[in-house]
Image 1 (cartoon, rainbow, N blue to C red):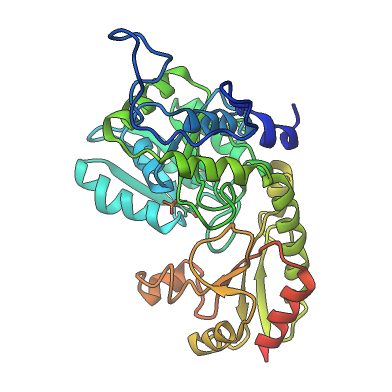
Image 2: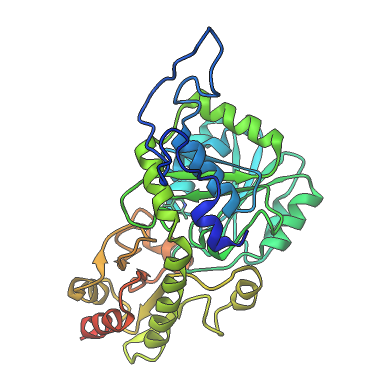
Length: 379
Ligand SMILES: *Cc1c(COP(=O)(O)O)cnc(C)c1O
């Protein structure tokens, strides 16, 4: 089955009781047993719920994995992966990970005796330099936030495999439509389904997919023990969102490419970060591991000041100033004063985050309206 058919049909069956086409919202905490221990595979909804099962099977198919697990948020999914670790284990992660991932590693799991190394993964020598006998997990993210750096997933997977280290890839920015890390050699793919998978800014959810039965047993045990499961209504919303994932992603990519080309030619813009641009550092790798270049881009103003960025952002009429990404509506954000405000200015500049850097999540509106909005806000 091709991806576009899987989004609509994989894992989702019409309701056996009524023939209803859409998976019912099984809003139930428990299930009747005909005799003690005799049931239809469902005992209690922290462990299993039929609406959740449909979504998990669908996501597994989209990531070409054997199994999927969904969680109450993207962070709950990452938390579950980190709980595979034990005190004294070491982890190598991208130095420009999603801020919440950096926070859970450094402020939560570090206190449990796990050691984290953050390296620039666009040069994989940096990864090899940190590997030792305690290294148990490599966490990669590509494209990254907000500079859209690209990590070569085939190469990092080969390094992980040769040292028998698990590789988990956060695939949120690409979505399963654009990139399938399991097929490129990753052991686990992690998603914030809050973003492109849900796609309509109406649900917070996370997911993990993989192929190893052993990892499935461990992760589902942690999930059932710790309990960060999503409710059936949220699972229904995600199933419904996924049915148009391919159509939305196609338009996100088309629109973002046009916006990137508008911005590089604008006299007030000094730099545009979009993997689809031929001069982007990771362009060739992105071409090799992604189907298209995604809906996220960032840019800097020639007037590199917080004031100039704020003036631009408050002049936007269609783009909404908000955190998050991946919904049908276009969003704009200012990393220096929003998502990355907690990082001191000096550290921010070292990481390449200029004061005027603006991040856009390009939606699926008419692109001419989007470009007109950006153009008028430039003043
Ligand atoms: C949003 C996000 C997360 C966290 O997901 P939540 O659903 O907000 O918990 C993790 N990784 C990336 C890349 C994200 O954008």
